Every structure is written in structure tokens, then in C-alpha cells.
Image (tube, rainbow, N blue to C red; front, top):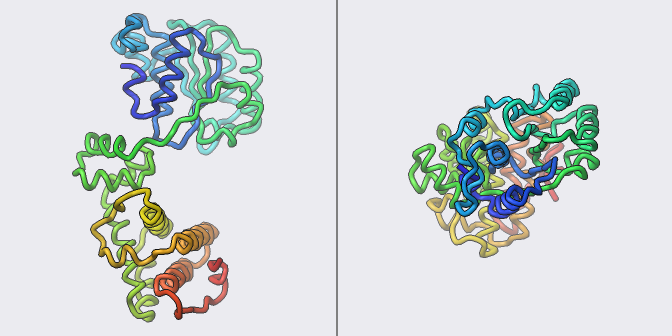
Length: 346
């Protein structure tokens, strides 16, 4: 196994491989990017490359053999010199970083390097972050720290400044599609829909591949487009039923945002077809104005924020559907919004 076993991340893999082969790997690395794009796998392969007992020949391009005892232990996360620091609840507390500091006082037990991998580094408390900063300012020999975070801006600036920052990119739709087909045995059409919905994250792809969430998304979009052409009384009756039967209204709103994004990309010529191309073409092309699509997106985003603030679910959904119906109907249709729903208007 090697960095090549990690899907995507071509630039990051090339850069990290160069650092390893030249012996210039810094004592601290920060791998940033959305979840589910391979940051943990990159860290794992780096740990193998640093501690492999039977390094492959340089011409092979591999950084580790993947078969020796050290590589096997690292893959199973039981190597004594590869430390994984994870959240306890919602944060990484000071006590956990103190444990890391104590471990760094002694030499590695088996490997050439001790590798400390801090997952969700953005969850470090301020005290834990400052304690880690002191370690990185005076790094102990034969220790490498790899921080994994969603965004560097979520960490202390001083902590970021002590790390070599490597930005990881979302996976391509084709890469996610192929992995989804292989791991969850979906059809090509289903895998393509999951890939579009996952926005380059295998973690999101896993969530969409479970159960009937993709079909639920299709139903939400179809329902929304049906409202645009139906009587307004039916809209009120259906939104009441919709709220009762929906297990996750916020997820339904995210599906609407996804439809808006797909429609906008198609109108701008960035994609030839949408994830749910089987929807009635006349309805799918109901909005021709990119500016209107952006307004709809903002309306739905505002509704999500109201939902998280525990506003009335039915009023939220009615407000979204009414506003979208107004724009899909075109000029000559205007509906008043009682109470807080006026906030949905731009």
C-alpha cells in the first residue's frame, strides 16, 4: 500500500511523497478539508512510510511495503508509536494533550518515529490548543504531528503557523461514483446520484447510500415542483401533511438547496444534466433566471436557520413553498407572508 491507494488528492499526495523521499518532512503537518475526502488515510500512509521496516525500492513509487509487521500494526491502529487523538464528546480536552506531551518525553518504542494524529483538530479547546502549541514550538526529536481539520481558520492562528499546511480537495464525482458502486453495490445510475449529492465526500456518500435517502430527495424535489403548478389551497394542505410525515425536515430543505444548485449549474453550462434527470423536463426548467435561483437558495438557507432556532416547522415549510411558487409562477403572482415569514423575502 502507498499514498496511491488514497482516492483523489493528487497534488497533496505528490507533495507529501516528495517530503518523505527527500527526508524533509516537517515535525508538524496540517491536513485540512471537508470530512470524507481521505485526510485520515493520508495520515495513515504517512505513518507507514515513516515506520516501514522493509521500505520498497524508490523506483516502485511506493512509500511503504504495506506487508511488514509495522505496516500491519499501523493499518490496524495498534502500533504503539502511532497515537490517534480523537474527540471526547464534542471537544478534545487539555488532559488528552497532556497525555500526548508525557508520551513524547520517551523515545519511540518500536518505530523510527512516533506519529501523533489529531483527528478533528478544530475541536481542540483553547487550553488544549495552547498546550499543543507549546509542544510544537519545541518539538521533541523523532516525533511527527499530523493535525486533521475541516478548515485552518477553525484553529488557533499560532497553531497553524507551526504546521506545514496541506489543503485537501473534494473528490471528483467519478471517483465517488466508482467507490460507491464498489463499496455499497449500487447501480451506476444510483451511484451517480449519490456522488452528486455527496459533493466529493465519501462520508456524505455513505450517508446517502444508506436506506432510501436518494429516493426521498427525489420525492422532495418532485413535490416542490408539483406545488408550482398546483392550486394554492393544495399547497397548504400538503405542507401540513409533509411536516407530519417528514422525519428530518432540515434534510428535506437541504434537498431543495441541492436542486437549486443543480439547476444553477445546468443554466450556467457547468453540467449537461442534473442528478434527477428523470424529473419532468418542463418542470425541471421552470426557473430560467440564475438570479432567481440564487434568491431561492437564500430563502431556503434562511429557513434552515429558522428551523435550527426551533421556529414552527409548518410555518417554515409554508413560507419556503409559497415563495418558491411565487417565483416559479412568474410575474403576476404575489403572496403575503404573515409574521416571521416575511424574513424569508430578500
